[in-house]
Image (tube, rainbow, N blue to C red):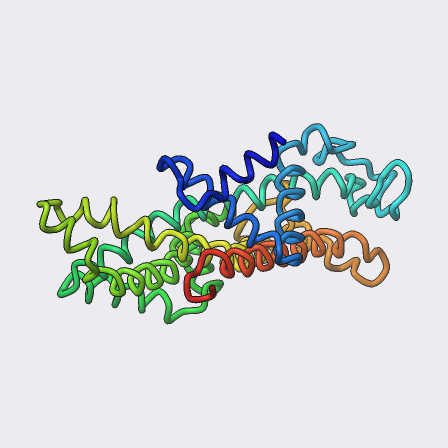
Length: 300
């Protein structure tokens, strides 16, 4: 009965408080989301990878950096679930720690890109005029180059490493959320609720931050979630080219780069980190599609 009463409270057509309305809306969003089985599967895989990344030191069976040349290039077996690499290091342990490194880079890029792109797009759309022209032309310049090529140029100008890769990917990933936030802002900036807040004397920045940005946030969340797969591929590409995480760090792209010569005989060495990249990219794509269906008003 308690579960039933809680469900009725969440699905009430006449919420008694703002908190009840917020929780009810979140619950209805979840109900709509879980009807998409592929999106739920993507969420499950993404959460599983995040779990492995957080608890990698406890889930790994070996030290990912310890070499054992007498045990090199062993196929998957009891002592080494996914085999060993060219230096005798346990591949499962390196993939688990690589999840912490790769997904950590993705999270860092998202935390930089989402707020910045949202702020730039909302400011440009609400202000209009010369500020809109300057910000959007700058955005067009970044969009004119392929993301990986532009990231390579930025990393080449800096020192190769994890921090440089994060900065380079963030510099190339903010334009799409910014343009989306601008389009949403242009749609609502002349609406009645914005005009009412303006008449009450709110400053432009308060209007943008407190009233416009929250309306644009769901669309930006969907866009950033869909972009996570390309962020993963870009990070792996930089690692593969030697401009991202540097050996002996167990980053997935770096692992493929050092093991690509074994693709025919000892296939598990480069293929397993490649499967990890594929699963991470696919899961975030499926998750983004599901979020788009429930958060984008145009999809309802």
